[in-house]
Length: 281
Image (cartoon, rainbow, N blue to C red; front, side, top):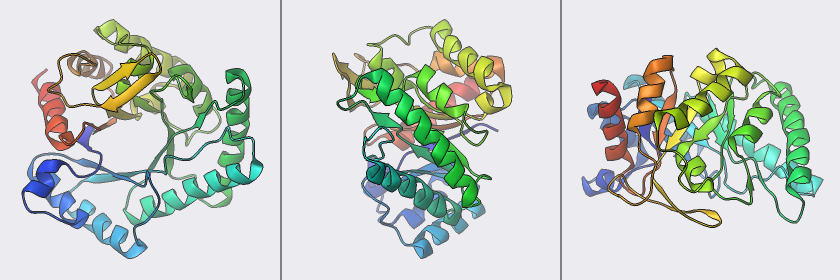
């Protein structure tokens, strides 16, 4: 089953008088959306009681909730102490995901920093192996952990790197952020073949089942020489990518991803537009 939904609460959610995220599951379900991503980008600052309350409503209204771990996770940090903090952020995010009734934890892998890219990728790979062990030790290997493709050139996380990280354990499944990929490749995603190349890479390296269940982030993103600059809305006509070619490939391969829209303020409306496009094919 394919699911569509927003990351966080859109401007319209608040404009319509809603204040608390406990209103989000019903609000989304009333519009035909079935996914919701709760971001801990700047810290895990929700109580377990509140996350459990939102999770119960998610079950009632059939809205699957994923969580995005803090943005400052960096498995290429030279400091083992800082890496240990990153492991902790992932584990704590998973605890909250379970409170929400969800199983997906999305996280940014790493930044290059002062290392060479090769050194940073190798260190991140080792840390992913350690993370996998910690996940098993905590009995969380029934959940799905989703390293994300990143939008800036100096971040670790192109398609090939994320695919290799996911080979470490079966509970690692990629978050393919097509806006990020498009930004870091200066607008390369245009045709169905451009998207198909990525999907085939995932299938060939991770198998169809894991590739089919990938987590997807989608938005239009402005980019410069360094890659990602800022998230836009679907109203933008300058930067991509466009969703229709991807929707055709998802249909062609009969994939079942969770698709989260990260548009700037219009994420629920743009998620609905993606669902409309997909359903129309």
